[in-house]
Length: 242
Image (tube, helix red, strand yellow):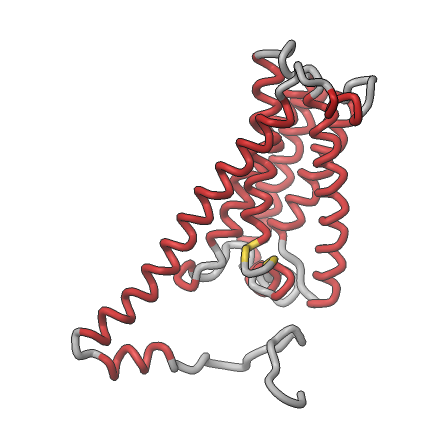
């Protein structure tokens, strides 16, 4: 377990340093690197919501328990894993950064929109950090995204257009906003479709076992009690007086 701690911390710090170093050389290149790291990590956290995903690599001890944080009530918004919302955001930043590098004339205001997204993501990171305090556990991959969001905020600030955000929205010649929205929405639809298919597959396996005459085994699988001591964090649903 301690080996996993060193491995995860090493990967997180390396990702931060690479993104920051590239941003020092070229801000949009650094933004693209940070967004790529955020995209990979957020998708992994979303995947870990599936029942068959198993224990996360960063569930190490009581203090650093990604599964406790990532599967808590704070990790979803109306039943949607917030990590997949992050996947959409990082995809939008990656798209805007890439197009800003290849087509600077059509995406000259990309920095202003990335700055706005960075402000929202950092504010939400602060809220999630508060939620981790309430849970008494921390997710190292979530912390890695806090740092990525700060890098995106810094990159957006340094790359922002001098006319400001309002002028960027009003500039019809700049295609950044529409491209970011399209990219983010497309990725969100794809990952949610995949996620729901995976969840549906697990349900179908139980239904298949039941239909095949294995109803006792299927029922036993559903009603299997967890082994060991179950730790409650206070966010569990309650029916009646607690």
